[in-house]
Amino acid sequence: MAKETINHFLQQTGTLLYRYLRKRGLAREDAEDIVQDTCYKYLLYKDGIGSNQAIGWMFRVATNQFYDLKRLDKRRPTVDVDEVQLVSLTHLPEIQLLRRETAQTIRDTLALLSEQHQELLILKYEMNLTYKDLSALYNKNENTLKTHVTRAKNNFIKHYEEDH
Image 1 (cartoon, helix red, strand yellow):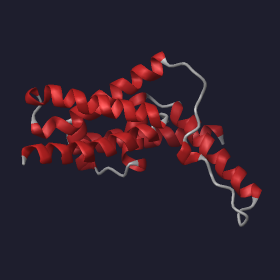
Image 2: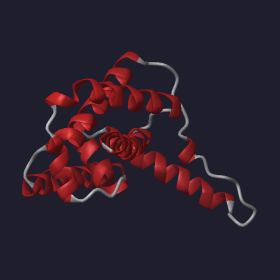
Image 3: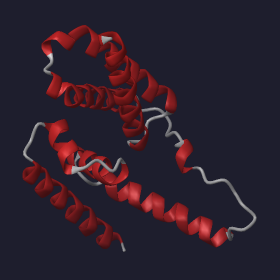
Image 4: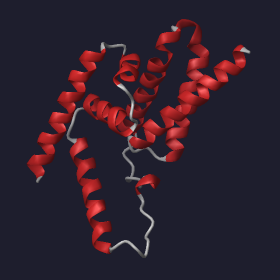
């Protein structure tokens, strides 16, 4: 029974990690590799990780591997499959262009923020995590994280308005 529970936990957490890494801009293959490696490391070190810290530990391992990959991997930029819009006859080209420009502006503005602020905004607004989830992930007080998210959001708005 414990084996089924661990498998279920790893599947759920792996899916969440995969979505998070894809939102951070990783290619599908790289995200899958990092998730697999993170789950493997969890299985190796699970005895030393508290049950209430497991998800936070796995997110930290995946995030560190993401940073390592970005630092070492200075290859050509990849296109996120989720961002590619299928052309429809009902959409006007002008609207498509505006959507792409807006998405690019948001990505560029997000890149101006610190890594921590990027993480918080993506986890909160793209992944729709609650403050309680973020609190468990970062092992910090919910009010502290609310303050950090608010600062990140205000910083994002400031940079976005400077460009427009």
